[in-house]
Length: 265
Image 1 (spheres, rainbow, N blue to C red):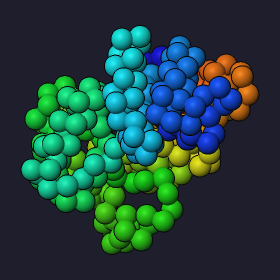
Image 2 (cartoon, rainbow, N blue to C red):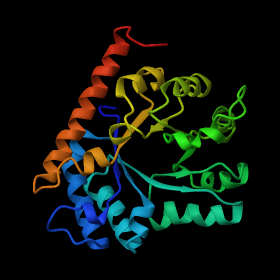
Image 3 (cartoon, rainbow, N blue to C red):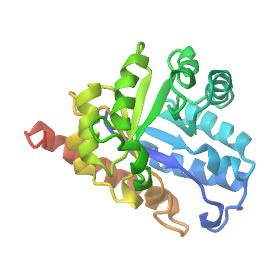
Image 4 (cartoon, rainbow, N blue to C red):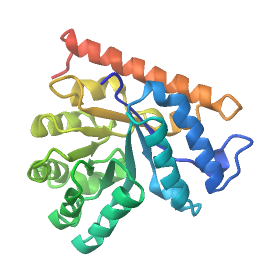
């Protein structure tokens, strides 16, 4: 894999550059421009469901995912939906993600247990990315309890039982590299989606050192605002491409450091 960068497509109507309408069509057009500009430098795109639903843009979201598949078929599309409900409802959420939207993978919450994960696994070849250790500090009160065997490690351990066909990944925030290393040590080469770099302040070198798998891969490092809104001017797409390329280069240098014996573990 030449890039481990994932671009979060989280359009905010009031922050769109001049010339884009603050509605679903404007969000779609803006995201298409970002996709085309950054595609040479990234491995995946992660459209955020709520950012489209908030502007009645569900059809625009479906169009965007189809656009990526047609124009950039080698790129993975992760639907950031964070769904989590009982099995009968999870079945419908899985259809929403994989049939209606055609996403390659979806983020889900494991709070309701095995029943809320299994229906997604009924779609062979589709990825299920389970929230494990999120990048926001306000989740500490739950995710770090109990002290001796915290929830996030229990989720990682449970994910191994769900991963019969290699369809499971985990979300682990860049803001907690020591905890990411504990997760990596537990789950082996399972893929990890990493939010929290860029605007949230996570460090790429620490993420790669703590979270890379045995092949110095196994990570998708996601950034949204720092790429989408790298410029508010007419050069927004070029600025986004430069930021994505900068991330790709920084990750490559960190991976090179691992190969040269610079790993922290």
